[in-house]
Length: 232
Image 1 (cartoon, rainbow, N blue to C red):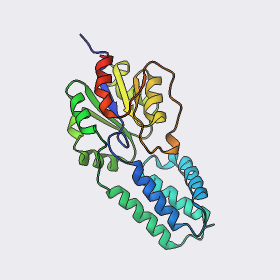
Image 2 (cartoon, rainbow, N blue to C red; image 1 turned 30 degrees about the vertical axis):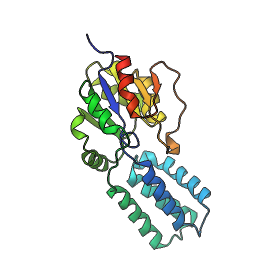
Image 3 (cartoon, rainbow, N blue to C red; image 1 turned 120 degrees about the horizontal axis):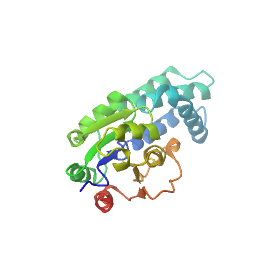
């Protein structure tokens, strides 16, 4: 008998391992560097606006974030940003790229369990080299049958990635912490979408949940194997 669900896609950052916490720590560092020029709330608004403008140019990930911080620093200082601030921003970005991977709770056991019964695909946005390095450091690489590092996540992305797997898009599930990138477009493509909330959420990844029976929300990844078994 063919399973209803044959392929499970996982997001990487803040679904399998910590990521946003390092962005928040760097933002705190950024605010301290520019405290003499503007208040933290205004700086945050300007940084988010820069990130939104720049996604189409730089994509997702640390490098685009660093460039957006530099752009914001130039803006809020009217072009008078000190050279040492630019240097410190670059160093902060380098620290983020070098930070060791820390798996979230229940990730190892859940991925190992599901790898025995389903095809697993990692679908993640971000810088190619950095994401490949994190996957290698995570120790999870051999458990995935396919890896897709994409520039963005849309319904067409999931149709393409899941369309290459056994059973196609309708026999696939996407699991992630971003309602906007992991869940809504996957459900729109015809897959199951499973939201796993993370304590920290990037402003640009917020969205309303889909009104669809293929949408599910779980508290953490330990709830995923029972859900998969229920779907069949």
